[in-house]
Amino acid sequence: MPAEHDPRLVTLRPVTLDDAEAYVRCHVDCLTETYAAIMPPAFAEQHRQAIPDTVAQTRAAWAAADEQPEPRTHAWLARDPDGEVVGVVRSGPGTQDWERALGAPPTDVGWQLHHLYTRARTHGTGLGRRLLDAAVGDHATYLWILDGNPRADRFYRRHGFAPDGGTLTCGPSWFHRPMYRLVRPPAR
Figure 1 (cartoon, helix red, strand yellow):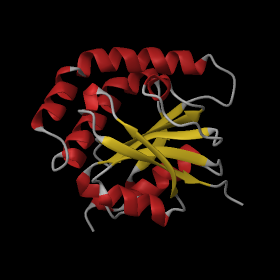
Figure 2 (cartoon, one colour):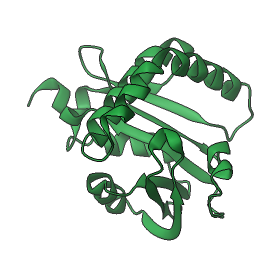
Figure 3 (cartoon, rainbow, N blue to C red):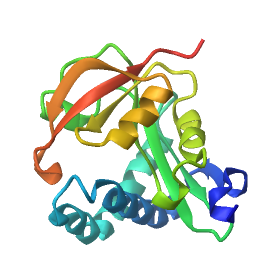
């Protein structure tokens, strides 16, 4: 088994401010891979062009989160044996501003998986599960998933998530695509 496919050889750790650029670049690469068949090419291009601003915003958000009491937003990254970031995940309490701005239906689930992405070459290795476990633990959790992403839908359903009926249309940066909410009860 190649090293990048052996989840035991991939290190997973909480982010530091110094990780922001590598984190964002992996996130954008994963967005490009994940949504190539779902989104227009302009989607990937706009995310690539925004990398410098996104890195600065990410650093600022992480610094602000570090000043907050628990529970607070956290992020982790996964590095392969060569040091390349091959997965990213972020989660935290409460509804995000973008959800309120788009009129998301309310939920009584208090923890959100903001995003979880792994490089395509790591799919099926267990890395996604490790990132999910790190990010949500035993919290009751919700997430939003873009329509037309059956791989992600299967992954989350395998790990106890189910639709709660909440739907929403993405904003302009996601080309107004429909999405739906999945929730998972707390681990017992």
